[in-house]
Amino acid sequence: MLIKNAILVNEGQLYGADVLVRDGLICEIGKITHPANCHVIEATGKYLLPGVIDAQVHFREPGLTHKGDIASESRAAVAGGVTSFIDMPNTVPNVLTPSILYDKYRIASENSWANYGFFMGVNADNVDEIISMDTSQFLAVSDDGLYFTKKGNLLADNPDILNKLFASCKTIIAIHSEKEKIIEENENYYWSIYGEDVPIALHPLIRSEKACVEATRQAIDLARKHNARLHVLHLSTEAETHLFQNNIPLAQKKITSEVSIHHLWFSSNDYARLGVRIKWNPAIKSQHDRKGLFNALLNDRIDIITTDHAPHTLEEKQKPYFQSMSGAPMVQHSLCVMLEFYRQGLISLEKIVEKMCHNPAVLYQINKRGFIREGYWADLTLVDLNSPWTVARENILYKCGWSPLEGTTFQGKATHTFVNGNLVYENERFNAFIAGKALCMADTDERQ
Image 1 (cartoon, rainbow, N blue to C red):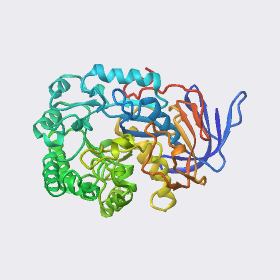
Image 2 (cartoon, rainbow, N blue to C red):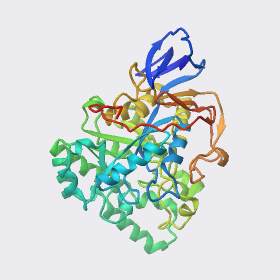
Image 3 (tube, rainbow, N blue to C red):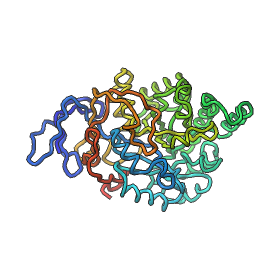
């Protein structure tokens, strides 16, 4: 397959080139004469990006497949230019043993449109088993989402468990950083005033800046004590961003962070319009926080962009405050959001690619992905920046069937998505299903 006359966005540069793909790999970049028996894709005027790597999603399989599953959500992902994802451990059962983890890999090997990876779950119940394992085999261990199972599962609230992990774990420890005790105190206060009918606009006061900052500061202090590898998921406050470094390359950082799309796009001003549809944990906060997160993304205190894609049915969302589920679907629309920021002059295409494609591969040491390089897997996204479209029920691909972005018009979109050299999505149509591959770390054979 030959992608002809594209504008490549790669490793800090924009330049015109052709890309030849053979046997799933990028085999040549440059001015290429049309080989015999080669399928040519004319890309004049379009931008070719490495496929987006979304390193934090909740695809809900196994156990919660009425909301979404690996097949449905990965299909939505590739329509949005996402070629790889890393899924979190709060499925049912929670991913607390290697056998459950490997079963998720098996399911994905049969059903995922995109390449896939999974975090091992860790909490107070299995921490001793985790640290007795060879943890270097895992992309990361994480507590994210496990607090939905029962109270006390947030590592940020358990310094003794964090100390134990930081002292022994040989992989990234990725945490949901909020102080549960502070949140419970705020919940009790507002319950005493409003009962079950707490206004959603109070969500960022309940899951407050203080709850986030205290948790993040403590986790960073403990990680530094042990010279351990910490990644703080979905930052939501401007104050937290100042706790991270931007004076060394990402590959040398021990402590890293991310921001999710919704914390860049929405602010607390949007609760009046969208209500519980934008109820996330951590909460969407003020316009000041939104701007601070964006600035930290640009100045490299924040390392990657994720979605925290978390589909729920509308019935599960549209309930009183304490019953409404937290999270919303975003993976189909993340790249479009960032391209809209580009059109507004807020970020360059090169920076978008750095944060969505290059840096996730660097952070999680993913082998031969995230860059347009000869010899790398041909995970590629072709983007048209001048193709307006509006998010509507009929073009939403999530199994839950809705999006908090409904009614939003974007000017750009992915027109072609290649996964391992296979053109899986082309001009709003899907080609024949070919399963993605497991994401492998740099010291393993990516062809396993």
